[in-house]
Length: 186
Image 1: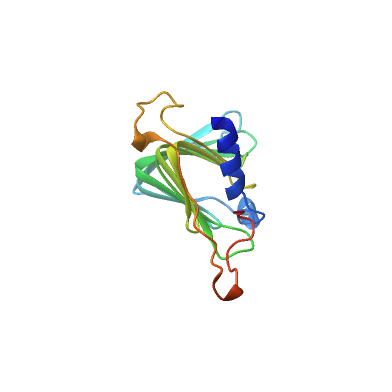
Image 2: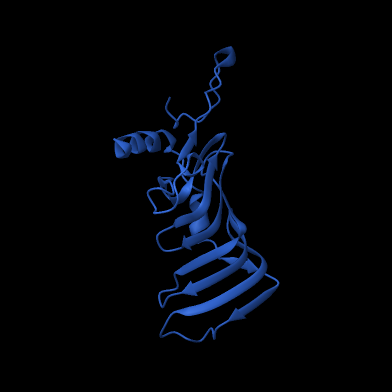
């Protein structure tokens, strides 16, 4: 029953507009107070770089802020970032609409190859006025599909504060105009 309810609620938030498509073709920029970067000529293994202190990572409209980011680059040039902090923030413009997806958590893992971000501990994701909270959120940047797990399902303590919470705002139907995103069903 939980799985059916979860699937139904997830479908309500999936939109026909996707994350900014041009972002995936943009370079990744990092700013930090300190950085340790492995030899850029190393081509035979994963290269690891560590950025600490007020880290800002951007790729097009994608922006992640954290206290620390460990960035790994594989031999094919794909990058995987683990961001930690109090709190890590994530924001990206949606393609074709003037709206952003925003997220917060204690730890975030970004996979440049799969175009996916995972939010761990105190995870929260917001699109417009709609919002979802849980202990873990997996978000596919390309399709805007996400999965949410409360702390009970992830093995943590269970209380009313640790359950999955979703808020759907009503559509604005004043004056016969519906200016909301048509991809969100009632």
